[in-house]
Image 1 (cartoon, rainbow, N blue to C red):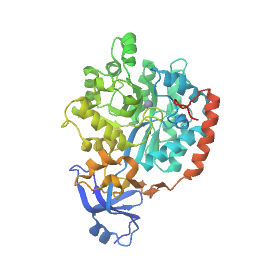
Image 2 (cartoon, rainbow, N blue to C red; image 1 turned 90 degrees about the vertical axis):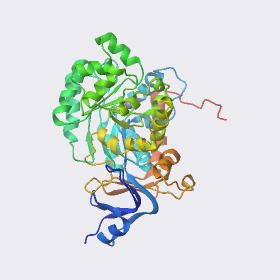
Image 3 (cartoon, rainbow, N blue to C red; image 1 turned 90 degrees about the horizontal axis):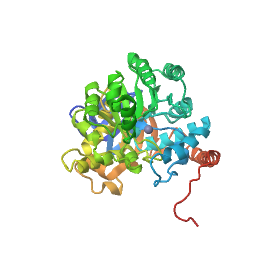
Image 4 (cartoon, rainbow, N blue to C red; image 1 turned 180 degrees about the vertical axis):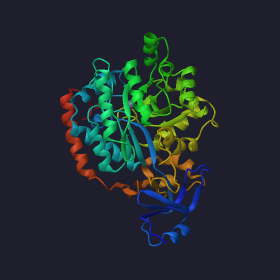
Length: 457
Ligand SMILES: [Zn+2]
């Protein structure tokens, strides 16, 4: 008989191959790993006198995967960029000046706040979509909060962007980050390019050559709007994903942010090469990017393509809440196909857990609650009014009715990072107070002027 470090009780949404939900179940955790999943009585017998979290009324799920999140200064101007700007203005008139003035302290503080929000909403794995200047500070924030993820440093060889440089310099900086954050730890690094049409063929091929032999992830942005297709067609004669396929860049280690405005040939290239896509539905709607003209992510999913969900950034999507993104994705899938049978809450919850883990190349470790996997576990309290009366199908109620507000406890790699709805690892109140001061200073230095649209008297 052994003692477990934790026994987590409730109805266990395992996300195993059969999608088994163990009613009245428990998960035993020893060290960083799930030791056993089963009926609570059996688990208690197997692991007597172990500390417990959860309750008979709780729902217990795998930790959620956020496959595209900017953990950078954007947090300090959260929801401050107006939502009625013409296309491109939010980036070039608002966020680029902020990125030009951000300090390492700003980046670490921003990442800390974003990760606290993420983990208190059940997100245990975050793939940084590109930290502009200070990836090490973001890694420190990940370590301090105690979450799993990958950092990324912006790479671009286009003129006029902060952090841009010649191909060799960009690749050396990416290689340096890979070497310092190897796989196997809680935090590693991806080869990360800005993407769009801000990477030369030489750069993207060199980045692919750096990532592929070691199986490291390559991520970049592409086609959230029709602009990228227009510039690739002009420069190369081909649409972006067709061009990148011809260059030999695509493959199972590649995670493309967005790929919203793609045609059939590009969809085919994604499927044929096993290239994954991170879909950030709130960002496309907040920015009015035309997602619903053709919801290509549903087509990708229908073709068994690799797909994960992302929450993007604090001025494009704003809330770092995977369940909120999952509900939106399911609703968009039903509505854009005008077919309520096309895709539902259960499919969306797969994207947030096991399918998302597979898309970011981590399904061997995370995404389901099964013996031998890392102990990334979310406890959802079902005593709140949003759960009354409880549905016989907990996933319907979790995705459509709850959002992240019902998350009470979160374990990452066996450590209790959230208890009773509060982050246990970081002094949240003092970091929030620091963030208010840092935000004021950053806004002043950047010269942007966020204000209330309506008179605030
Ligand atoms: Zn992004």
